[in-house]
Length: 462
Ligand code: ARG
Image 1 (tube, protein in one colour):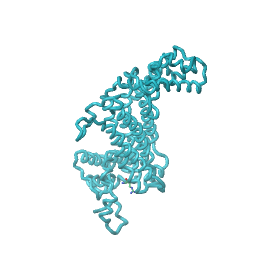
Image 2 (cartoon, protein in one colour):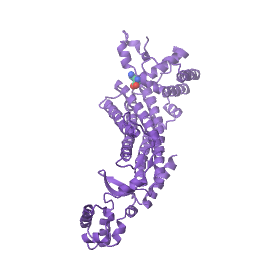
Image 3 (cartoon, protein in one colour):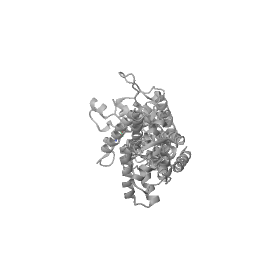
Image 4 (tube, helix red, strand yellow):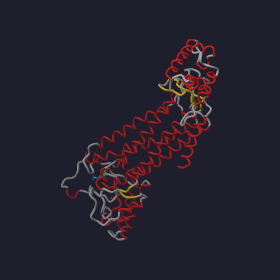
């Protein structure tokens, strides 16, 4: 079997090497990027006069035939061809002849070619994933719109802390995913540059025009240092990191959904469509989707750490180690796309049980901080002392098997004479929530502002 690079070799390669060295099994996923990149390159060679117009057109047409063969399932991917770049070029030469086919690789190297293909892939998937993140934000916003009056405990240390609205809790996630969306977009902007024409590592003596290729492929410009362009994979690491952050956020959301669907909480009922049963316990209904997304966070982090480690300490410029850059990215992208879709669908069909949420608010003295704030505001008592007095009230409530909001005025006065009627109002759960009118607070007034911001964001990006 002839190799494209066999000129300086006198022995055939071992079969072991052939399969070990090949990346075709996975980089065939880049066939479209490879072919469109090659067509743009051929067109540029024609426009600049490096090839004649007829030659470049014949090459471009040949490449389109290869594309059709692949899409019709008629193309044979062979290990001997090593990678997608050589497979396409080899087939092109079969179709249009070696003489002409051999001219395509003028002023190009596989090093800038693979950097181009991979950038094109990452660029497209960045947009695809950002759309799914936006859908998730929309769904969270829809839930938030109708749940401003649903009271639930806010937690710290997984202990009841202060009453919040479900709307407020959902918006917390909406803001996290908004930043994830913005991070994807800023990565897109940073990496929207064509590396083609960097060649092996040092540029080319041919009179190429890199901008023509960039324009044809919709890049906003070209990269500025050939060695950097073929050496770095930070664009791929950025998508891996962006996906990792998305999963860090979804894993927290999923963890809460898992907790909330348990019999201890019962805050939500996940629809049957997105639940599974047990092979032995007939009564079981399990939140497998949320658990799987939580679990997949591990592989997504693994892919990020994997590529960071591959790239660590690599001397410039291209090293074959870098062929290990693709599978993790393909896997994280696929995992993100399937997980985001199913999470959004699951959330849409989840029922929120406001009665259980409200009931939960009645344990844990959620409005205790409000009593302390009342003592500070209305009696000018230093916060530390107010904290202590309230602590005594909590103890009294505990001793009587009550929530602090259920103490009567006499009971409160037995702790501190200065406490007046108004304290009873302050201790009511709903009032506690509504009192938090600071920017970013949980009152309806503050939540309305947050909702507006999220709605504006969605509108601006739809
Ligand atoms: N299959 C290779 C990769 O994925 C393509 C680049 C090979 N370049 C080279 N000089 N061997 O990285």
